[in-house]
Image (cartoon, rainbow, N blue to C red):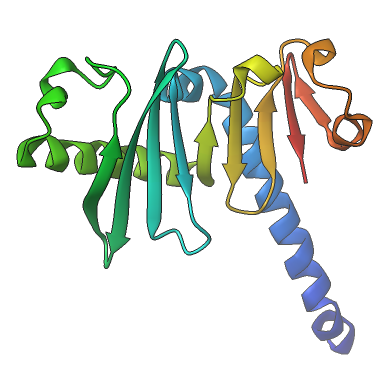
Length: 173
């Protein structure tokens, strides 16, 4: 019995390690769905997860929407628009209160879907650097799609940290 009590912390760590790898495997297994969901978008958060920046990309232009999260309520703060119509729909180009509520609704839904996969944020903004999709996991890992490792800038340290999941997908601790 004493041996079991002393080994409980080790069992707990092993359980958490398996659970964390499960999130990575789950994201990889659902990569087609997540890639489609996140196409031409990004969602980034501060450390407290109460300030979100939602971005949409079209060609070399970026629209940014700033949203705060307070007691479960999403609040539109401001935006920076570089192109109209946005990929979210031309109806959102009027900057009305209804548009702001719709942005908050879309950010909330996206955040909830990502949360179910253990994803804290993502970006599609590094395509020119060879990473068309990158997920930031809640456990501190990153999952990245790199179709061609040769396109990654000469950063050998970065490449050494990559662990292959399959096809063109990798993760880093």
